[in-house]
Image (cartoon, rainbow, N blue to C red; front, side, top):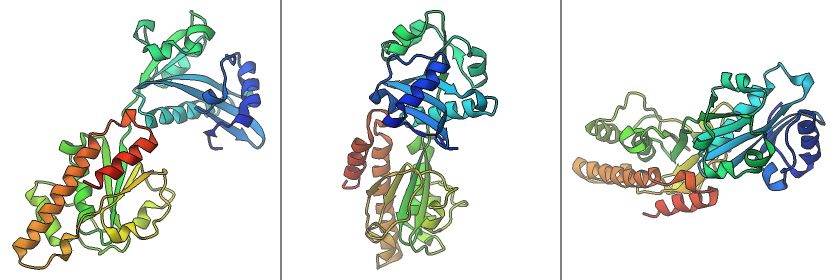
Length: 308
């Protein structure tokens, strides 16, 4: 049974389950419920949990499971789903208050914290300041930063998209915050020799590279994508597959260096110029304040980068 975002029609059932579990409900509002997850077995609500966000922290709250479902790992699963939501929102710490489940959350990686260490935004929530007793244990868990999956697309997946994949996977650019992929709508099946030569001159490993179809990233077990960038006009004009993860997309078109005619040195210069443009765009992308930007602002930012 999947965990899904709560909607307004869930409110009565959420209140019933929280009341039955002895958890606060006085501050529940429609806005607050927008950060809750629920699980249903047919029409019956069997689990719920929520988050409150403040700057780069979150408060885990209202985790409850129907008695008949306890002991089956449902509680752990909803906590993990909420932690995944916190990571997507770039929360660095998740706090919680509990009167009876300190040992349980300890097994999930939460540790005791002092109330003085709690950020003001979390302290200001009603859950923290009024509803939970002062005797509650305060726990915190530091979230590992979410690695953002970025897919670069072109037609042949032999030059531009391969270069971009390698740049974003270079630790000097990404600092380990991104995982880059590349694919083509009609892959060549081989990587252009000047692409490999340029990467090797730049001391970037090429052994793992291959030219592949974008269909590989539309499968149910494909990595969920956070960003998809087309780097050639032809691929941008084609109908893309459905990408798992609902990624932010933008067009970062660059001229095709493989289409340049002339001497080998002229061709090498075209590849080097493309490499420089893509590296600069990816550096700008990597410098974005992701924690401070909502989806609309991210969309505007990555679109603007593609014009530079």
